Amino acid sequence: MAETKSYFFCGIGGSGMLPLASILRAQGAEVSGSDRALDQGRTAAKFDFLRRQGIALFPQDGSGLTSPQQKLVASAAVEETVPDVEAARRLGCARTTRAELLADLFNAADLGIAVGGTSGKSTVTGMIGWILDRAGLDPTIMNGAVMKNYASPDAPFASARVGAGGAFVSEVDESDGSIALYRPRIAVLTNVSLDHKGMDELRALFGGFLAAAQTSIVNLDDPEARALGGGITFSLAGNAADYSASNFEAAPFAVSFDVAERSTGETLRVRLQVPGRHNVANALSAIAAARVAGVTMAAAAEALAGFKGLRRRFDLIGTRGGVTLIDDFAHNPDKLAATLSALRVSPQRLLLFFQPHGYGPLRTMRAELVAAFAGNMSDEDVLILPDPVYYGGTVEKAVGSGDIAADIRERGRRAEHIADRAACRERLVALARPGDRILVMGARDDTLTQFAESVLAALPE
Image 1 (spheres, rainbow, N blue to C red):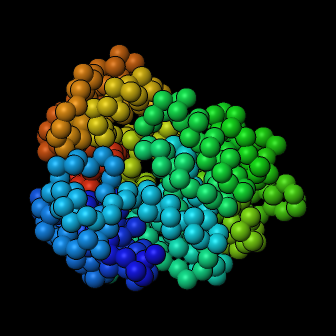
Image 2 (cartoon, rainbow, N blue to C red):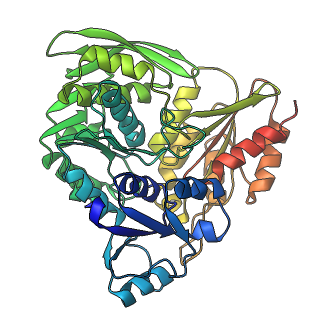
Image 3 (spheres, helix red, strand yellow):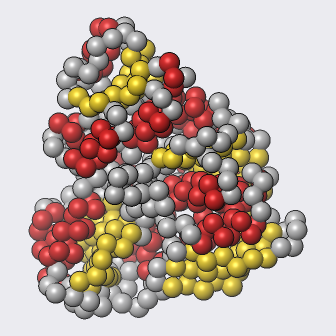
């Protein structure tokens, strides 16, 4: 496919679009694209990275589409009035979505390993890909986050790896329903909880995902995932699973545990450079997938010891004046609870900054978000909430950050709504004292890491 096509990505800087564009370009396709962020002068380094791969970039004004041989890749949510879409229609260009194109590439692979679930799928994808790479399977990896093992000064946005082997490891998305397009040889389901869709729809989507796979791997500790069934299971809770973990040893930025394989009785010590029990569960699922792919337990454990994690997944930005700053992608109740739980290994106070990823999610998950914060904050912790991410358009703003802050205060925890992000930074700096940890959380905003870096820089020495 890639050798004979010319692809134009409308929104090429997106977390799902950029790695797919990189994979196609590395496979020999002609790739070009546009992005609203490029036109607005945001995240210039990301677009420089694309240009270095030989990907031509254009304003989002239709000028990049000049031939009917080009195929337009755009989200199904992109309006028909966007100039690129109008130009493609005028020229008679074929059109596909990111998910459809990815599914075509994935389903054509000899060994397709798909990772689904509400939380953890990017990390598990990175873990599986790294294990297969170290084991010599030379996989292609499609991820929605930058994998630190593959990032370098020349490739700072390494959310994809292109290999010559027959393995294709990819996270798959339930938020747009596209998870139904995949036919994996191995399907991993991390968990099922409220996020983008209602629970009934999620059960149907994830149930279909498992049914389409030759082999499924399911988290036995998650009630919703367990109810969907699975051929291979993993557990941290002492359940009778095929892969289980015990003897946890937690550190602020690491965790160790014993993994036991029921079928062979083999037990090995695993040491991770990423913290938290949720990452132990992620590692168990990755080991299970690697074993199905033919990797030994010892090779999987050795590879995981060298796994550096993903950017914006409990990412240490730095320490200044005795204050540690961490950047994290947490944005739904499960992810927030997992990250806060990992931080509780140390007793120091937490200063939390959470930027909601939209007004819709706030309305849908209001009670669950409040419970995740109130249940995992101490009396000393402080939560600061700016207004949600908003890029325009019609959206109901019935529930805002102020409502969440008020609900959390009613639960006896300290929470403040400060609409402006610059003012949030000033408040965090004013509150911070030596020994504190500042955690920046949120999704759908490429500038959050720069914000985290700006908070660190503003702290006194």
